[in-house]
Image (cartoon, rainbow, N blue to C red):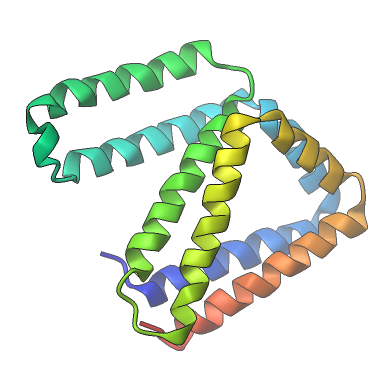
Length: 181
């Protein structure tokens, strides 16, 4: 199991790295953000990552109430993931990314659950934001497209949001380096 300080460092590096990319190459970032919602390659990538990650959790979960149905459910989830990849191509990247957000939130919740630190509340709060956006974008995937269009319409807006994300990333990084538990 990953420690909260390790997770904190990883989250900090990812947030700071993505923010630095925005500052270094804002036009490239804008093109990426505008293309992402309908990108099939990104959709398939997140679908595979999310499906494998979900199936790993499902396989390792001790569900005694469903023990007899576990294998058929596992096969059903695989068939469902393949079916989504074949037949749900509209906004596949958004939907697959939303599932990924849920799984990242689960990782954060599980890691921060038993932390004994006054800063530990930051992690479930961040995970709750991920769940909110995961639900919102799953139900209305075009909202992500609209949000990304709005963000990309102004370089100043794009950089301001990247700056806020960088502050959060720096906070996670410092907390991780200080070895919060």
